Length: 159
Image 1 (tube, rainbow, N blue to C red):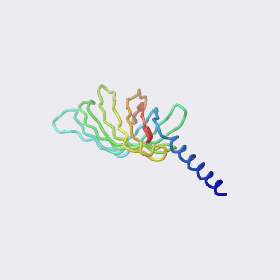
Image 2: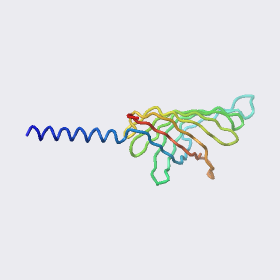
Image 3: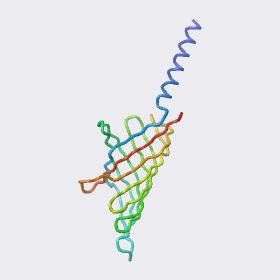
Image 4: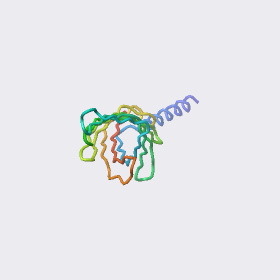
């Protein structure tokens, strides 16, 4: 009986270890992101034509090629002169298997935005995540929203 109990215990421990290591590693997520301002303020600088400072809360929907979706809640701040300048913010993406929180920075020039993510943390399948990512604006036929191509390279413990 003792041997059987020890065998069950060992089997359960090995199964748990295998399950936790199944999510360890590097994962690349690529998707389209549609964003919309929720509570956003734009302030024009006095005596500098075309200079604005903007900040606020935004919301987004991530759409993967295979049909999966996720949501993004974030805050953004930007400093633009005639449509060109810098931006930064903090994002939390929520997917079916967990969430990712990241800081991003980038620039906008000639109507095109590019930037980089630094992954700060994660939950669920992305628990204790780190990593990087890329932001690139995409052609957008819609008014009042922004469209981006996003790539996140996520590292979870064990890599």
